[in-house]
Length: 196
Image 1 (cartoon, rainbow, N blue to C red):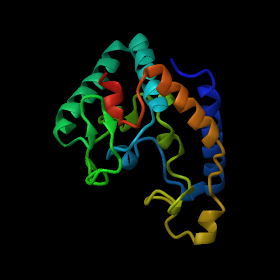
Image 2 (image 1 turned 45 degrees about the vertical axis):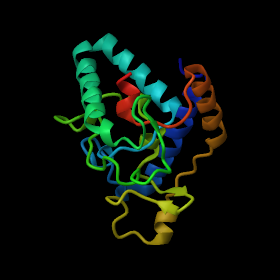
Image 3 (image 1 turned 180 degrees about the vertical axis):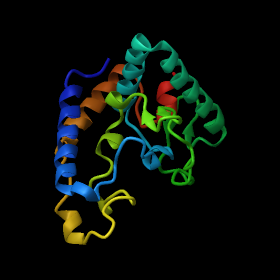
Image 4 (image 1 turned 90 degrees about the horizontal axis):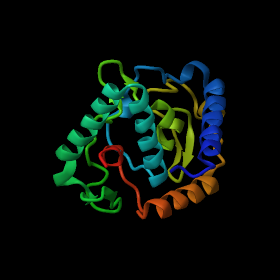
């Protein structure tokens, strides 16, 4: 089960993204059908994994056939990626420090992406990375933006659109709760989260 305050975390992230998107205006190219950020695996927390699994259960209740297709894509991805998985392929727990993680499965489409429509099948349950991708977001490396967005914008114009997401402590606390409840610690990827 998701920690009780996950809805609060999602609301904070969605509000921060909407605010940054409003300020970015036409510089932000993110739109339904744009799937560049949906190709290539990335680490997700156990909190994200639980949210995705609950999203899949909800989809199965309303559209079992679509949910089955998503599950099949996840299982297929796990089978394709198992031999080169940078971590424990049995549990799906990543070792992000290992050589090769940066280059792991960069061309692998997310199993939640509908290849026919270019839409996310579990959009309401998407991981935090997906929720905040696009607008400028401060990371330890600096201010990051999607390479398709902010074409022609100056550094000051990009900085003026920076997303202010002040939920790190809440997210860490909720992830710890999710890890304790699941008895699993560490990050995974979408395919392993859904292939369970």
